[in-house]
Image (cartoon, rainbow, N blue to C red):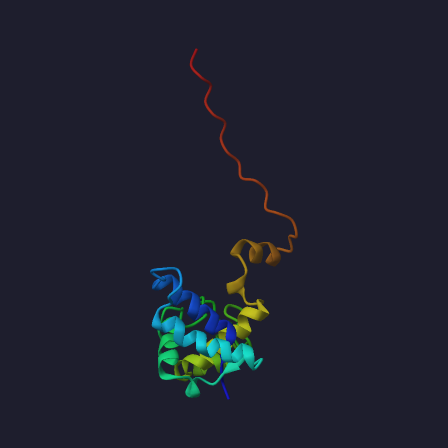
Length: 155
């Protein structure tokens, strides 16, 4: 069964803390308090994931509000699954994940995001210049570009 990873709960807490800062440095907003309760139970029970369907309604809504602020799909418009690859070189999703993405729940989508982020092998996690050097077989930095000399100062 899909679950919300503790790092997503942490991210949601931090997002809410930034969005609705404590007025006195002590009091947290209702969303942070709701998510903190879930977080504390996860830590206490050494659970890396929580079941979103059993979360208190306020905590689940606070998490969903954070989720709505994140990018929906990891796609970078370089889809190699359309060319027959089992795993997309651009985003790191499998062919099945790409095909079924619109039907995934927010929790399922975040699980895929977590996996591809941890793997870090998809092009979306590399700089374009690094990929270009690798494709040319270059393992050294690109040469510096030529700049025209400054004109001589007038006498």
